[in-house]
Amino acid sequence: MDDDSDDDEEDDPTAAFEGLNALEIAAVANAKRFLSQHVVQKIISGIWNGDIVFWDTMSINSSKHPHFYNPTTSDPYSRLRVPKYLKCWEVLFFGVFLCLYYSVLIVRDETRLTGPEIALFFWIAAFFYDELSEWADAGAIFYATDIWNLFDMIMILIGITFAVLRIVGIMRPETRCNDLAFDVLALEALFMIPRICSILSLSPYWGTLIPCLKEMGKDFIKFMVLIIIVYLGFLTTFSLVGRDSFSLSKMTGILTKIFYGSSYVGFEVMDQIDPIFGPPLMVIFITLSSFLLMGSLTGMLSNSFSRVVTHAKEEYLYVYSVYVLEASTSNRLTHFYPPFNLLSLILFRPWRYIFPRYHKYRAGRIWLLKVTHAPIVAVIKFYEYLKYKGDDDDEFRGFKGPKEPKGRRRRSDIGPAAVTGRPSLASPRRSGPARLLPTSRTRGEDDVDAPSSVEVQVLELQQKIDQLTAVVLAMRESQIANEKNEAGADAGNNLSSF
Image (cartoon, rainbow, N blue to C red; front, side):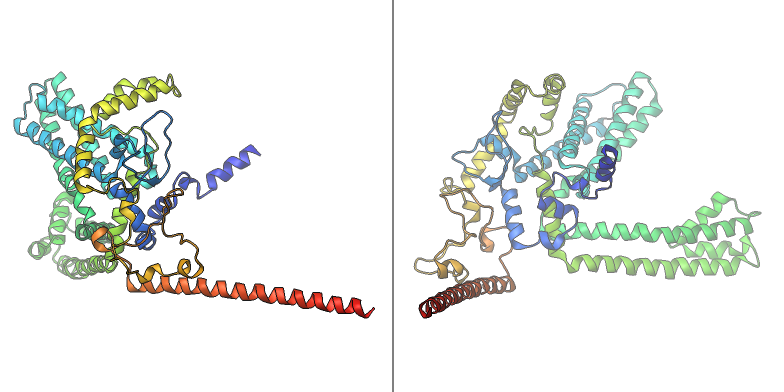
């Protein structure tokens, strides 16, 4: 029985989604249309801005649960978990990373480790530990949905390779090893600079182009399989036919030049390959590579681009949603920004394996977090003071509807509540627990678009259906009551007749 249960768990396709909420499953499943809905984006934007939070206290007994942020009762250090502030710190971290990178490569001291180089090693270590923590918190499936995480892993791999080569080159004074280390580090810029500019993916324009490039890259890799097959076939034929004149490496270089547009090279050497078979085979290869294959590739990539651009809004909101949800998946109470996470790793991580449930261990992490992140929290609170001045006591400040003049009521507010006299579920009440069912807002008060006319009509239709259903139920109840009364009257007449 135990073996059968284990096999069932291994074959269960939903096992990988355990621990994920509905929004995270939608992101993993590429449910872009669902994530682009106004109500869903309302919640995601609330998480991004910190109007919806999962931690409100910093104590050993704190637990994770979603609720509206209340600045009067929440711990200021809980604002460190807001995705918007996490992104700002990420950009600052990579900016310092880039400065250290340039300092090391410009100095390029091969005889000793310089100060910027040692700082770069610590920066790479903090970056690596932060990515491992993010992987553990989000899970492998959800972690892989963000394309920028691929850049992070490549950057870490390059940094570790550089560190190993550099240490070996210092311990064994070898010029070649040191030169190779700096050459490997030079590759970091290919991924670091786009990674710093990844903040542009949160804008509607750039957030649409990135999915376009991603889809075009997938189609390009698929099409390259066909090109490689054709290329290998012609390479084998030309190498064997012209084996007396050209070596395999020389023929590979010639066909590669032709493939990248230097068609004249093929016409110059086709007679040297073979007087009989060389010219016709070369003409066929040039025609295939220059017209058929390249034209097909261009058309396919154009279709990929247009397919994504057609759903530009959904693609952008998907990229935006993935980042916000990824930043809020952690179940850890204390989240240290890099490079402060190295202090937590060195001071507290070893004790976790000895005292996994020791409360003082958690209390020590909280104390270290408050000491190291106090300046960051002060900047965040000052920013929120300037932005939300006068609204600090409003628990639902990010989910209020548009302000209307006195004596005027929005049509969208007239629904079943106005007819039946019952409160609507869409409006949160302060007397009870906060409900994550926000109402709509105008563009000026929200980062997402207001409901379209079709959505408004659907909402009104639903309200009318609710009203009609209530009327039908009332008529049905009254009909049942009348039937019971008639049945009772008939029974009474029968008894009187006896």
